[in-house]
Length: 232
Ligand code: SAM
Image (cartoon, rainbow, N blue to C red; front, side):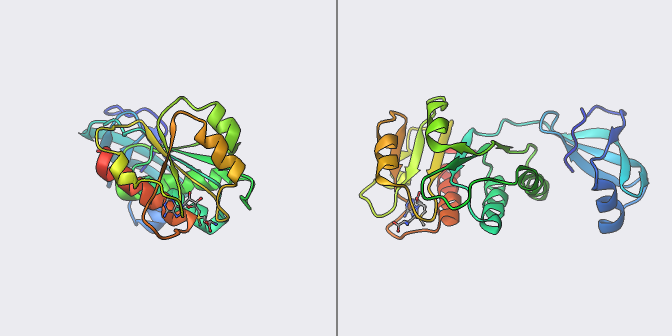
């Protein structure tokens, strides 16, 4: 379970809203039962449920099971997708260990905003399910050019379909995080967008095979390649 409070032996920790119900009604746990906790800073802890009442629970950390390990800084930039596809990408990207997700607004994107709260909940649940010990950061949606203006120079692979880009896998030997992958909307990037990205020294075009992938497939496939070849 993800909690926000610091974790230290014997110090009571409040569960987040909804977790009392989840523990009591869904997991059928009660006072004295064990749960595992993480907060993104203090590793994983075994805790005892101290009290549980409706939606509220108090958890008592007893033993650290795993220390916190650094998450490789692998980032996903993508044009926001329709709700179900976006939620799917956030879940799978979290499982694949993405460090941060940056929604970028593009000319042909059909979705102009994200539901940050909902996506954060999905990321938290995915982190709990896959037993990672931190949550990916989800940035606010931002114009593509503004995002690139503010970019810190981390190498960014632009998912490029139909072109003659080298494969992402062939570009990775010798590289280590921080690294990012940038995926366009269903309608693809416009020529001016591609030209503008081509002028950024940190952007390189990369292919994920000869087929045209749906944006959500490209996002997940790109992260899988980055994780396999440059992650942990
Ligand atoms: N409408 C575009 C077209 O017909 O050429 C296709 C866009 S594709 C559905 C959405 C995004 O996924 C693209 O902007 C690109 O970033 C990524 N993508 C799709 N297939 C890819 C591939 N084979 N290699 C790398 N990126 C790919």
